[in-house]
Length: 456
Image (cartoon, rainbow, N blue to C red; front, side, top):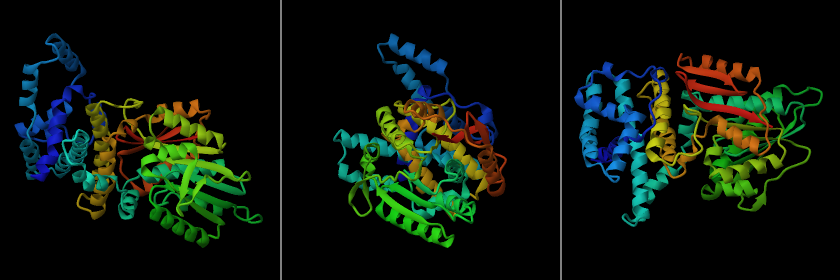
């Protein structure tokens, strides 16, 4: 019964299918078995049809009919309700795929559970805000959703999928190019997490040092919301730096989950020792600001503008940005929840398809990644602040330029290095690296999923 309850929000989403964005062209979904080839029964075809087959023209017609009837179209709602599959239909469609041996399609159908769970949490939160549910009953589920992924799941994601490695490798190359010749380097990492981005960069800095002058001194200020994680990250990075004889310092900055963007934009932070402080800058250091999967966590346009102006005032040699991409160039904000769910489903269906092509479906690592990393990303993308996730490079870039930044095109080596990463570690024909507008994009089957750019 619990599984059926989680699937119910998908039924509600299907009821509003005429309001969703049109699906991407068939080429972008290459690798997904077409509905007619799945040999589903009537139930399965109805399920997939209600979730994916819709048109803007029929939406316009329905809206006009609603206006003529005073905003109410009972016959239209009745027709939509009869076409929407029940929770039983959704479960049976998945079972039918399993019975026929189409395991990838069955996993995709079952993968809707992540979106169902996210919408169930959103519905419960709205009910609590309206006083219909005791907020105390939601604390356990909300806490679980807000918890960061375990280090094991995070590292597994870094191993089995190229997204984090691509972002880290490409951003590192941009930083390496920008700080060449500097004797003191300061990297401000706004989302340090487990610090897996930095050992390759530290090693590259040490290896290219002039033997006569010795390696430069590197300091990383790592920001995050979990004190223990930051301390462990600092310990690991210090140990690694000692092993390659690189002068190194790590300073943790603790940011509150509830007020991250206000703290960062004002420069007010708290160190792991709980002492209030401002970000420590030294005039003889070359500064690099790293924003990998960070900007979407900020608030609205005003908060984003304040943050970027704050960074620009520090005069960094480079600022790196890595964020998710979507078909259509992105959105300033998606307040319409069905539209946002459609955009998120388009994005994560490609991510799950990529995992299916490269990772055994029963592996423990993949299950941990789907539950702790991707599942929580989906929950956040459909949460109250999730409408800001899908701005895309054009809008992130416009905000950076408005703050006084200029694009710093990635080097040809950065792009070729990203392609080499895929060939060596993720040898699937589905992944695609492309350079455009001075940035580097990672996609799956021509669908853009991630972009990395650098600014000065």
